[in-house]
Length: 616
Image (cartoon, rainbow, N blue to C red):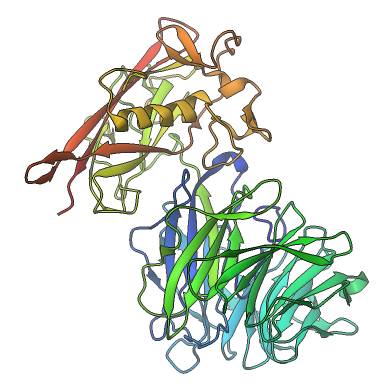
């Protein structure tokens, strides 16, 4: 299990690396998928923003981002990797025959998901064909497998994200190390050794200065070992046997010794090429990607570690490799790297059934990575810090045009790159945003050929906004959407869809415990079972006039919420283009809300205008 934010190790395999940026749960925001494209020459990392409502992917502005090195474009997936610690992303460049081959690229992760190269990057490993990456439990050391030189390079992670080789690195290990993982309270390093048909277990010496094989290491497996994973209890390890069409499973004993579980290795099927394994964080379920058959197999795990196949789903792509699960355990992402003969270079997104772990592809899958070469095999997932209206610079929120003394009660937060223009009088973003259809910086539906723009909008309540010094937030008693008005006869289809988006985000119309799409305004108010509690919907009833509609009567009206700096989940707000005889023309939508405090005389009336321009 690759646990995203448990406060210990940041985990990775050579084929499915996790990117972990462990901000507090209450600050969960936009999720970004990163893919190491393994291109030669000129490797890069693609960054794709996850639509919080649908799971679809769209490129982050500026994607892909060059690594400064080169990948291998192997005919079979030998693997590159991508992993992060806090706000830093690391990606291997595995081609030793070009400048900066055999290196690790280092990036800072910006708040919008874009990447900035850290000075000095890429950093040489002094080994040949680096692949797998993993991070020590205290997140101070980065371990890199060097496949062809049979070594592991260990780096100190500096405060600015730069890497410094530990004295004595690279360190010798058994032949052909590929996947890497530290997932043990005992500071043990697990490596898949492809050529030896085995898994190596190593005790990590002080400061990463030594790697000592535990007794009996390496431990025999099926053959052609690739991606590996360890369960949450640190009691089981599973590895994909690429050349044996099987999965090997082990019990982890005292000191790290491995013992095969019953039935191991488990045959997958003729013609298969297992590539990666991934364990569901809370269910006894294992996912296996298959590079040759282009699918994902789902297995139930018995109490003794034995595996039973229960489902096979197609990825819809080619060369299915690395996988990752989001922090809420709601979605699984898989990279399809393709092959030199049949390139794919896309990502499939699945929803995960909460009770069984079964997979269903989301509409539109797979989604392109945006590159025309290479064979990506590693995928990562970042959850960026959730935006609020408290930042000093730049100002992110628009008060919406109400009186300055009450404007902090409710503010608009619209996601755009670059940010919306600023009102020169207030130095705050204008409450008017213009977007051209298909511009990935503001139109988040991923299409420039449709008839509308999809804006990402949040409502932030009870804000301690440093840009509004004359406004002191107290509480929020009710929220009313004046335009578009719910149920109005003149509403068009987009108006009605936007009403539902507001009702879901603000009124708690539904709750699915997903930090990206949950309807409750605070994480603690959305609990398993699909209800908003403590108090319901953070004490903010959605009203028509003075009549609450969510929650509906006779539900008691919640007490006013004094929780500060609460931003709703991201809403998909649709603004259609105007159809004319000569094509599409610009069209705007006006949004108006009224937010009251417990003092009936104190209210905030805010407006927002969103304009969609036709694609050029």
